[in-house]
Structure formats: C-alpha cells, structure tokens
Image (cartoon, rainbow, N blue to C red):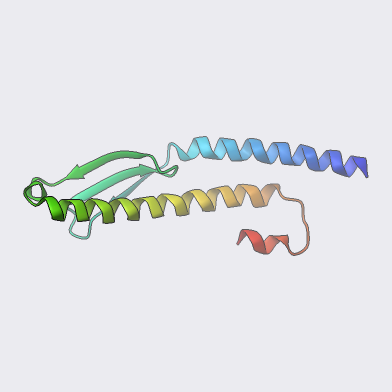
Length: 108
C-alpha cells in the first residue's frame, strides 16, 4: 500500500515539475491576432503577456474606433492564448494522473 502511495507521490511531483516547465515554455509561444480589417495587430504569449500592438496610422484619427478595435482584438488574442495554455496544461496534467476510472472525462 505504501509503495503505491510513494509511487503516486513521486508521480505527482514529476507532474508538477512538468507543469512548471510547460508554463515556462508557453512564455516563448507567440500568437498573433488581427482586427477584421487588419488595422490592429496584437502579439501575445500563450501565458497571456502582450508583447506588441501595431496600429495603422489611419486609426489614430478616430479615437473611438481605435478603442473598439483594441478591445475586440485584445480579447480575441487573450481567448486564443487561454485556449492554447489550457490545452497544453491539461495534456500535461492528464499524462501525470493515475488511471482512475471516470477521471479521464475531466480532462477532455
């Protein structure tokens, strides 16, 4: 019994280390999102850190439109990054979980 428990604890430590390594790797994954017309472009990491925002000069003349484009494009970029992050971390967590009947549906 204790052998199984020790093995499981070791597996959990290993999984925790893999999750931390995955989080660090996600800092290097860049995602790009553009507004519908391409006048605003956002680069973000999979850990949701904004790296750059590019705005076409024509938008600088219309503050309200610029604000709208920024909100929409940033929200799309954050959603994309969140999806990548969640998928990557779920894959690592699922890999490290013991085979318990019924638990596999939690990570789909």
